[in-house]
Structures are given as structure tokens and as C-alpha cells.
Image 1 (cartoon, helix red, strand yellow):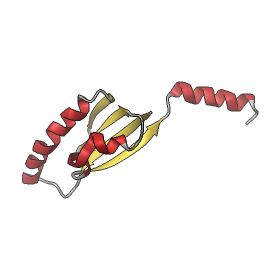
Image 2: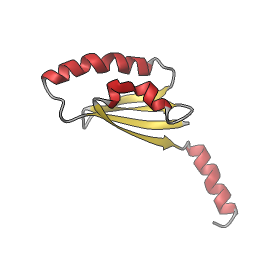
Image 3: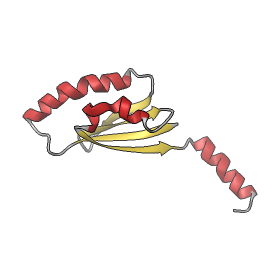
Image 4: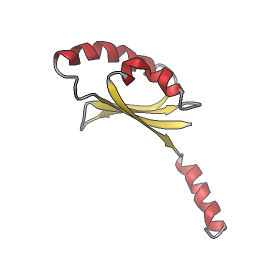
Length: 99
């Protein structure tokens, strides 16, 4: 199951705290990238944040993968992703059923 996960650094973290934040987030981001579960990732140009497309078996894996380093310093939004092919198949099934 794939999830689009966006993270945004909390607005209360600024300047000197931001330097310490990098010391905490850097290794955790590297760990996430090396997990084998990342299908895509990047930074968000309009905010202090980023995104991952993660391939995981269950939503609770997010807690283990992101850890307190992310959950304690960022807002996290996770949305399940439906592959376009599967959605297309579903739409065709609905059309065949007159729905």
C-alpha cells in the first residue's frame, strides 16, 4: 500500500533551534531514505517541508519509520494512494454496471 506523506517543520522552530533540528532530522531522513520503502521523495519549495511516497504494508508502519524525530518536530499528513491503473479498472467496472 502506498502513502503520500508530507511533513512540515513546526512554525515554533526557528533560527538556533533550526540548527539543532537539522542534527536530529538529518540522520532520521537518511534512515527513511535507506529503508527501501521510499518510492519518491523531495522538498516542498513553498514551505519548510518535504514529501515521501512510501510503500508500506500497514499505516502503523509510519510511526516506526518516521519516529519521534519527525513526529516531534513536524506536522505529518499521510494519504493513501490509489494507482491510476487500479482506479481506471474500477471506473470501467462501474461503467459496465451502469453506475
